[in-house]
Length: 306
Image (cartoon, rainbow, N blue to C red; front, top):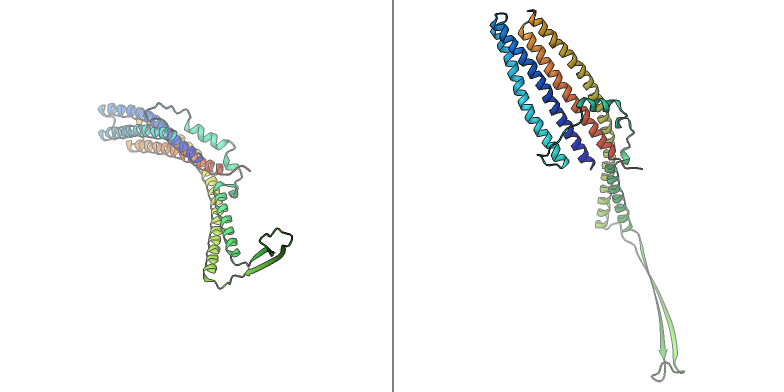
């Protein structure tokens, strides 16, 4: 159940990312369409070169193709989410959350990254610990095969003697007798089969103990790693968000400078590419932060209640 919840959360994050990417690309397509049309007019008026106008049209075509591809991907990711949730792929599904709001909420709230983690209290650890106890009992059982065994028997008999055939007559004589017997069986350590079985049981016990220790250390390391990755991805998202704001201001400023003849179309294209890369980095860092939170929650929910 916890694993299914984690996979659904990841599919939901991916669907949100794809949907918001489409919306951003739509806005950029409109922006570049206006800019390309404006440059075509400037070229016709002899104010910019045809190469500059063609370069901007190329940028517009590229972003339009990217939008078409992203729309298809958004549809696929939403279908994947429906499958994870057990819905039909043709069932209508609306995504109510905002990717940025989820990241801000995850970063600002008291998340599971701040909770204590006890590896020995996880289901995985307890399962292996039970196998270790079984291996220990197996060693004890093999030791028991070498302990002396004592057998005691007791027999009580009564013999009747009579001159006639009636043993119940007054002339009958009963002669009681008792027999007590005891035997001690002492196995020899030189028995090859028994010694080999004991040695194999010890090896299995030691291997299970080593495996349990490695599992504990691995769970601790996994928890520390997920906490660090979650905090780093949140910090990366905040940095990417600031970079996008800077890139947008640079892009707008380059457009004004281009219209004034202060920069070339190459500078304008570079500013647009920088803005697009910043947006992609922002979305990817948001998805990474949310996925790391899902992984951390999955690990924490594997702990049992004390």
